[in-house]
Amino acid sequence: MAVNAAELFSDRARGFRASEIRELLKLIDSPEIISLAGGMPDERFFPLDRMTEASTFALKEYGNKALQYGSTEGIKKLRVLLMDRMEKEGVRGLDLDNVIISTASQQGLSLVAQVFINPGDTVIVEEPSYLGALQAFVSMQAECCSVPVDQDGMQMDALEEKLNELQAAHIRPKFLYTVPNFHNPAGVTMSLERRKKLLELAERYAFLIVEDDPYGEIRFEGEPLPSLLALGGLEHVIGLRTFSKISFPGLRLGWIVAREDVMNKIIVGKQAADLCSPALTQYIAYEFINRGWMDEYLEVVRREYPKKKNAMIEALKMYFPSSATWTDPQGGLFVWAKTPDGIDTQAMFTEAINAKVAYVVGVAFYPHRDDNSHMRLNFSAVDPEHITEGIHRLGDLLKSKL
Image (cartoon, rainbow, N blue to C red):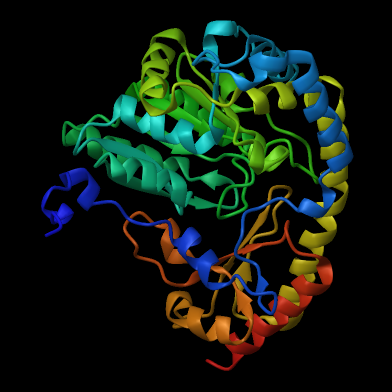
């Protein structure tokens, strides 16, 4: 007789929730369905010839080292290269002990959660917020305190009010989590004024900021803004970056930037998680970046993605009901749309699949699951013609419900 594993699960495991995005993707694996649900780069722009050359060189040049275990912190020459890139962005005062390679940024989120969160601890998140971050925090049994975003990112007045409420209740948040550039899912960017205000509040109320910046290098309109890490330094900011959006998800690489006392704990957590990230993909990434090919690839992305985004915005104007609203991002991968009052995007999802179009239900991005009126629409992985047709199908479905 098989052991009933459910009787043995930890309290933490009993609270695990599957990623709704991952579950949705299982349902839409059909060429007939136009999927606006992913968060993937467009693989048609991947420079396979250069990746082949970088991979072949990495194996020939680094040989057995590329196939062996590496250090937990990651390959030194890649970390130095990333430090140099970040210094050009305005991040000052980094040394090698402040940067480690992670197995993509989701591992960074998981490690930060493990290092800081005890059951019942409070973390502050945006509303809406990236689903993967919510998963990481809730899996450690955190209480998520949410602050709304608008066109300029997290609302600082609402944050300050929330901080005062927490202080009055003798609750000190462990950290605040934000995606300041081309927010996932909302597509908005935190203004410079709000970035400075956030750092001021972090100083006054003594909390850390976890800055998740997967999309910062995918700006195709407007002027770049300094990161929170560049503005505030390591004292108050932990930085999470990834190769998955600015290059190739298949590398499964990212990097974490933190001050040394925090990093020491993160390193021990990573040792327990996977010992080290893959040496081979680190060497490949190093060669790809060092030869200037990453920047050339990003130029292609910055040229092509706005064509897709503009196609989506024009289709929304043409086909969505007049009472619907949406964001118009200056970079990244997503448009965030609000349906007319009374239309539940979660309840409508099955009908959308029947109409051969998919999106991500907005409720997945709310820690308290209290908003059913939004949908996340991805433009990066779809060509403009299919974007237009997909929005047309969604628009017809929405209008049929009015």
